[in-house]
Image 1 (cartoon, each protein chain N blue to C red):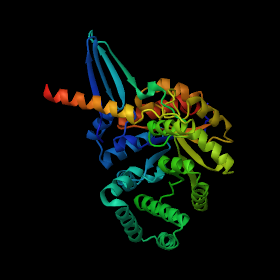
Image 2 (spheres, chains in turn cyan, orange):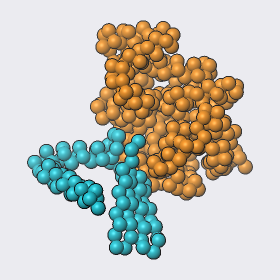
Image 3 (spheres, chains in turn red, brown):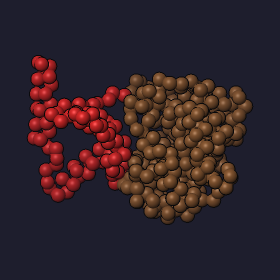
Image 4 (cartoon, chains in turn green, orange):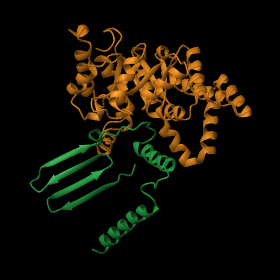
Length: 93
Length: 306
């Protein structure tokens, strides 16, 4: 299975995150790991993955309350724009 | 304590044999690289039995059937109770991805015909002609039973069959009472206990009570662990539902939360739960089998091991 991971270097250390865990390493080499188990990932009804339920719940709630669903097209396209810019800049450096 | 001393059930699970780790994909990959031959895996299952396990819970796949065949060849198949889970959803999804749904149906029909199970073949033909989903379900179950009997040599070890969580939970969501009653009736007629694998334990209990399905005549396998990992909607709700059951019918999985807890911490929590029938634990080496089932016996069957 393909695995997605992201690594962010900051002035005080590095954050690495993948589907299973988030690892925080400070400049003094102290590392803290958080697994899914630490995140209280329960949902009202589980099918496949917790995210699917949350997405559906958000969508249904937005419909019944006549509110905007988040992320909506506008916010999602802004996120896509940021990702595109990061990719372009990483390719040019 | 877990039910009475005598009736506690310890099962060895098959996740490590499929390269599955609930802690991380990295760990799963490293498992896949280590011993995964049927002989090695059969050694691990038998070491578990030698150290206190009563049986084997597994998804019915070519991998696990090869393990059973190997155990049968060693003439030890009758030493363990078998608790299969069907269907092995990932295998069917993989075939459907490669050949499409018509390809999956064609392959399935061919395998039933080749199996020589006349009852399954006739039931399947009737189901297709009349588009009757109950007949198709019965045909599918007959087919899986024939696969297991073929691997085990008609051993009497088969005592229950579990419906995989993908089907159980999808059918719960779609309110398919007929599927649960058809499944239960089919297995009960063959003296097999209907089992249900779920990640929505409180909801399943609620629906079964509503549908008047006798909870004392089934088995349920579902996660129970101190972190509440995979326990939906919450650990507290799962514990409350467990306490309402008329008798111990739950086999706990994910007890060690994929290695997140030390065995000692994990078993402290399990020992505090009333109404569990037993637990399922995956191990990938003979040494782990010795340590894990040795500890389980010591902590949860103290009167028998003293």
